[in-house]
Image (tube, rainbow, N blue to C red; front, top):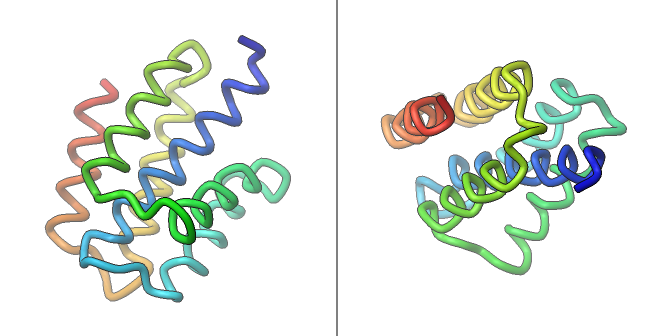
Length: 123
């Protein structure tokens, strides 16, 4: 697979992971949506952030997966694009998740659990 497509798929995966964090309280707040878009642009740059931002919006507007469904979907995408999932990208994804977790009313224990799980599952 073309590395550009792999990277795009990985950016979609981080959006799916961030979505799973944002819905741990049962619903997505508008502030969380706005914060995610800003965090993703800050971390990946405006040009690269579009794939993640559009995926986040699709999940919220059309699909609405559960926390577990979103998490498993993201890990599957990462496993399918493992050759493009560098340590630097993994670290970037962890920072994105941590920042999304803190963006609205601070981190919850459920959010911290998802981040810890991601770190463990991607080692």
